[in-house]
Image (cartoon, rainbow over all chains, first blue to last red; front, side):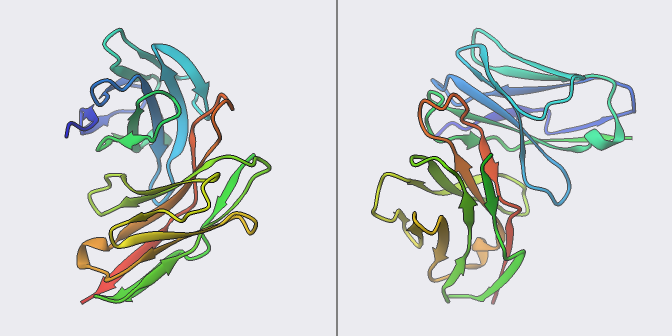
Length: 112
Length: 117
């Protein structure tokens, strides 16, 4: 079965640079969630989209923005990167907002 | 706000034995969803099992089963016939009910399970 695809899988950036993470949900899934997992931490919710509209917002810094496109893929844009942004970023998708969330493999971001 | 507590940071089990991971949560809502996710060394988050609060019957998926005690707000995971591949970090997660408008997952801190050959 098709799974959630995230790209890139690994990303290394310098402080103050910009990064863009991409997420391709499971086919027919219309809801996308973004989570951030720091080292040794549990995943923390950042933001979600349902039918291309932002549906919920968590502890997402103002330096971050995201959107969901007409083909339902989503992008997380991160600007003015800080050392503390180094983490594993997960995208999850679900069929409608009420359904079970299935996670992608994550993008490991390292900020030097 | 909902909170999820996993009081066992680490546990170990002998291969082929049974182990139970604990999870408690705090909520004022009566209808909600609970999940166990597994995160092996690859860091992939894999759904293990899901429980709807309105269902009295405990969910079961092959060797994995839960003991859902709604009044006690307890949601433990039992792994039977443990296998080496079960070694992972296990996260308990809570999701608000339908109509709440917010369906983010709230995770516990996780329990690291080691399987001893």
